[in-house]
Image (cartoon, rainbow, N blue to C red):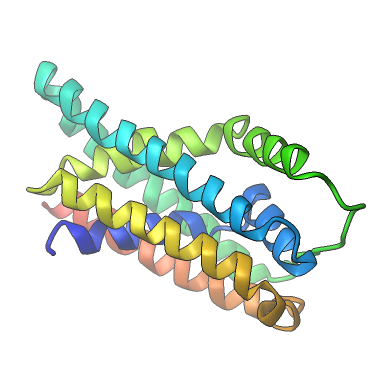
Length: 198
């Protein structure tokens, strides 16, 4: 659990950030179109990327001993910067997620659009392959860390997809995004400081 819980929390913090993928899942949930397949696709792609990040980083860290230390400080710097960005967003406010609908799409087109949104976003590689991979090396059980991160992703996407109808009135208000961004900032800073003090 000492590895599983940090993996879960880190993944949840990264995935909570407002982004194109989350907006797409939310929109599909609000429209009640292909919700299961959209959520499952997001969960599978995240699981593959997280697994690759944890496994690949471990192999690289073993081959190049100084790389782990460099990535630990780099990961901490990224987390603190990411947290600061979320804190600034919480301070400024004004974020509202529009889930305006487009014409209904086929399942194939929907999944292809989702895959493009996922894999053409450079942040997905930074978050999963680099950041999650580098942070996982700091914990004794990288497999448990990866499982925690994957479970957070699965839970989040299914809750977002199926709970979208309940969230619509809440996240139509800018104050909701301010609270969410503040929570993301605190979590990111906490993990970043933990990396620096280990």
